[in-house]
Amino acid sequence: MTFLRRTLIAAATVAVASASFSAFAQDIKPRLIRFGYGLNEQSNQGRAAKVFAEQVEKASGGKMKVRAIGAAALGPDTQMQQALIGGAQEMMVGSTATLVGITKEMALWDTPFLFNNVKEADAVLDGPIGQKVMDKLQDKGLVGLAYWENGFRNLTNSKRPVTKLEDLNDVKLRVMQNNVYLDSFKLLGANAVPMPFSELFSALETKTVDGQENPYNTILSSKFYEVQKYLSVTNHVYSPWIVTVSKKWWDGLSKTEQKILLDAARVSRDFERKDTRDEAAKALGDLKAKGMQINELSVAEVNRMRDKLTHVNAGIATNVGMDLWNDTQNELTRLRAKK
Ligand code: KDG
Image 1 (spheres, helix red, strand yellow):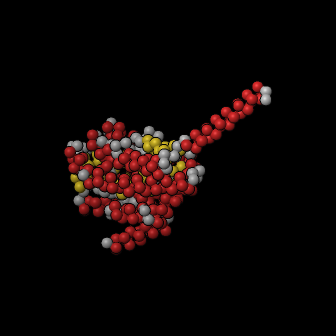
Image 2 (cartoon, rainbow, N blue to C red; image 1 turned 45 degrees about the vertical axis):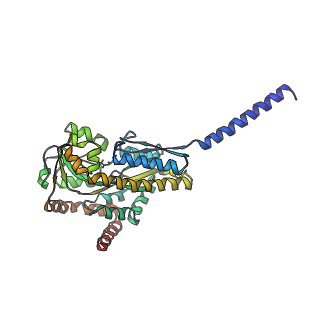
Image 3 (cartoon, rainbow, N blue to C red; image 1 turned 180 degrees about the vertical axis):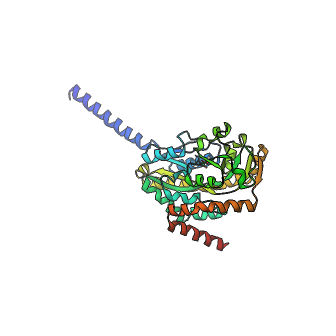
């Protein structure tokens, strides 16, 4: 055999070996998943994102790796939602309220005073009604996996305690970019200003806005107590977060990979709800210790707020569809009768 022939065979052997090695290497290179969220790493949202990442890595034997990226480093909720739809980002967790522009049925969860407690919230969100709303995302390029808990929302501001609705009259109140929140706080007499969460702290610090509304956990983790003197307990709406996936990317996964993500979303949901509730249970004490002046609205004033806000319900029912609205009201009546 000539020298040239031997060289060509040797070169071909090396080429095949390196191709198969790189194919093997390709096989074992983990699938990377960017999981974006808006609060900081130390928040309840950040802690649950970490649990989700650990669950995925464990269940996939290291073949799937989640990079949890917080503090809106990948952009505010609305920007991340578009990145998922376009396939430029794999996953995120964010507010259902900012999804209304994509899937109108998500406005169901914006209904003021819809849930009386977390037991009702869990039952409806994790039941067929929550699933039906979640499934509507698929037409728009998103896959919903699980609802996490943001929590019952309360008012903070830098001007005065809100003890009656009239105290809101000249308060510039930041709200999420969502018409129900905008209309609700206009109805209550506030000067409602829609704004991404990522801009909120500096807007409060510079007095661009006087106040905002969020669950205790967020007031703590985002250090709003540093720029807000008054916390008025209203529990005016229960706010969910939702874990979503880019459908473009999801459809390219194996059934095994999809199950790993779904199971991890549910395990981290259960962790997140307990973690959030444990933290919220001691939050009023923590916020008082941080210097906030806290007042609870009287039942009479909460009822005045509730009566005023029923005016947004008709619009929500029309937008989400009467069947979904009536099914939800009937389910809540059933749950409350079960007590
Ligand atoms: O990215 C932050 C949002 O997911 C969530 O916290 C929304 O409650 C929210 C707010 O006030 O923007």
